[in-house]
Amino acid sequence: MGVQSLDDLRTESEKVKEELQSLLNSLVNENEDVLADVHPMLKTDYKTIKKQIKTQKDENEQLIKQLIQLRKETGQTKQQISLCNLRINELEKILVDQNKAIPLQSEDMSNYEYDEMQEDEYY
Image (cartoon, rainbow, N blue to C red):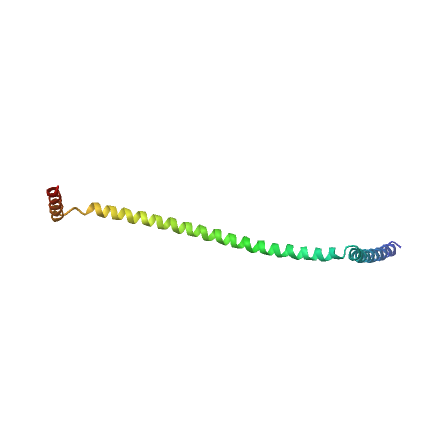
């Protein structure tokens, strides 16, 4: 008797669920009909807005991806500029050290003195 009562309850439960689903479907359909009658443009506007929102979301995702890529490229460019600045500084230091290491030759000094003497004579 207990098993049969349990089966009866399950059957009754399934019937109630089916009726409930049927009533819900009916309610949704009638609600859509009322909306179409009362505000015919409302549904069209809703669909349009929904499409626009999706389009905007897709565009935002693309822009965010582009922004991330640009930030990455900017970081890489800054790093390359920094490396170039270091190399320039090293080369400048090498040039300065080389200029200090090269002494003036005596011939250069004599030409320098001669040029200076000629300038003095004109004044």
